[in-house]
Length: 402
Image 1 (cartoon, one colour):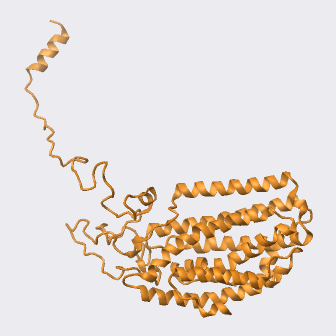
Image 2 (tube, rainbow, N blue to C red):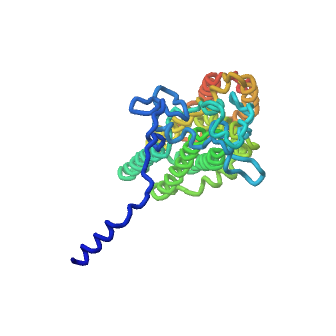
Image 3 (cartoon, rainbow, N blue to C red):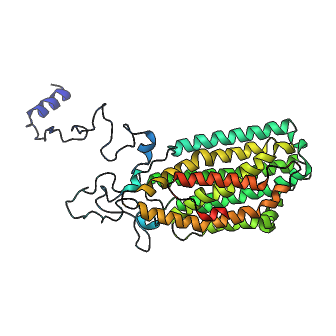
């Protein structure tokens, strides 16, 4: 008998070991069938989509920031040194239905029991732009690519040589000064507020708005460097003197910096920036002055840079802002509270914006080829602002007629 044969015989002679056999009970992962299981499912079991079918945007934003009012049974798992936990709903004076309800009672064995989705009205917000990380990168990459191509084409065609002397000074001081505003609002308002929102949907929208501002500030800074190289006599540092010392810019600077100092209320900060500042000062300067006057002074490039920022606000940033604040004036619990609060914000910020706008009037006279009259431009901005306020369900403030 060989060694191999003797070993096999010895093994077969040993008694069989007792090993637990797997028993399938249909409790293992993936075995059970839930109401939303299968290819025909139209919703998930942890949130209700805004439409019949959930979108990719909702998949990557809704409840990424969990809410203990809904199913996070252990409560917030993180907080701040002062004891504040999670994402407090008190970080704005605005209210959405359900925010005054007590947190669900938690105890051993309570599981994920909480309020039904949505746990409160803030969760109903959806960004109409459906912005998330991928869409943000794609959009801004396309904008930067187009702006760079326009500027490069202008360099190759020697288009900057056609600028009138006064327009060169106008761009170096005033267009350059606007980069400071975009930087301040982007970094110290929208980026600063994006952690304060009550849901991840709000915070994502604020972060994208922030990046639009910061990208545009960078666009203007790079454009300023290009003009320094291409335009004879262009002073690339003149914008610093204009921002710090020109009387025309001190009113705008005051309002811009005041928005960064709003006391612990992300709602007021965003409202002041996108509902008041942008239409009454931002669009007034970008659309009613720069984009109107440029062509007559031989400049067909600057309007393309400004136009990208105008699209950012008019077609994207204003859209999410209206969807954020508009429903609050019709809230089933706090409509009156929210209206009174936002009307107070209008009464506070509109006079400052109008005063700052009127201080800008002298720069309307700087270009050789003049833009439309300042009063006509301001009336257009006021009309635009009035339409935004009306769409939000608010009353046009009397301070607008100052």
